Each structure stands twice: as structure tokens, then as C-alpha cells.
Image (cartoon, rainbow, N blue to C red; front, side, top):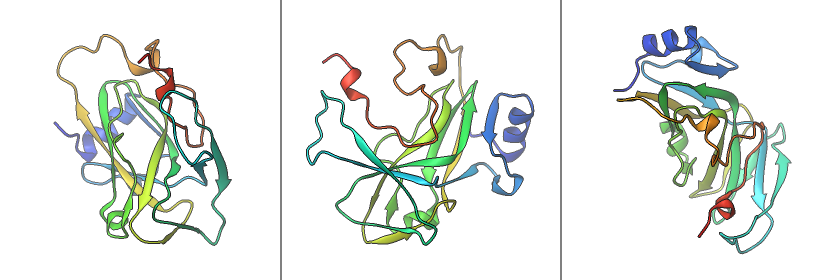
Length: 178
């Protein structure tokens, strides 16, 4: 079941959901709008290797915006730091962003119970498009969980994305054993 605006607010008041900074104007009827942070990243290597640590180069989005290009893969980040302690958060792009041809995630739209961090965005575009720091980029939807959660993400020993940083985080696939 998806939480309504009143259920999201009640969960925030109880400390079960955290959004910083929180703005009531960003609360929709059943979602919360998040915004593009000020930092983007591009992988340095032309070929990515799933078994190695691929590094990214960070850069700030200038005040005049930054033109994203097709055939590039950008890592972005939300301005908002979030926590969810008993709900499953899903991040989806806003329809206005999709109508500009911007995809904000390749496969990672779902968080886990206990996800406490900024959201890394996996950004690609269909046409060149100028983006701005602070622009609405996505919306968080919260689902109730059926049953007890034995291990929240924030205390899971194998969790790869627990280091809190307001910048994009590269793939940690290389930490898996395969």
C-alpha cells in the first residue's frame, strides 16, 4: 500500500521517515518531490569493468545550468537526505522530467527499509537538455511492508551504499563475489 500525504506526514512526525530539508510544498497527495543536487559525475574510463572500482570525476552544475548529452551516462544526486525506517521508498522521475527525455535511474528506483542517505541518480537523456541544480527531478513514494524486517539496510554488514555523502556514488559491483 502506498502512503498518502497524511500518512507520510505522520511517519515524519514519528521519525519513521526523514527528509532534509523538508518543505511542505514538496509533499504531493501520495509522494514527496526531490531535487537535483549541485554535483554531477562522469565515469573516467571509456569502458566500465564490473569487477573493478571504476572512478568518477565530479563537477558542479554552474548557475547557468549544464547541458546533458545523449550517449553519456551521468551520476547525479538528490539535494535531499532521506531516511526510511519501516517503509520501502521508491524513487521515480517526475513526469515533467520524463517529458524532457530525462531518465533518472537505470534500474535502481527502489530503496530498502533502513536506507539513510542521499539518492544517487543514474541519468541519461534522449536529446541534449539543460538541467539546473535545485530543479525538481523525482518523487519518492513510500510503501508499507508486510511482515517483520530482520535486518535494515543501514545495519546490514554487506550494504555497499551506507557512506553518507551529498555527491553521486559510483557502482560498488566490484565488492560482490562473482
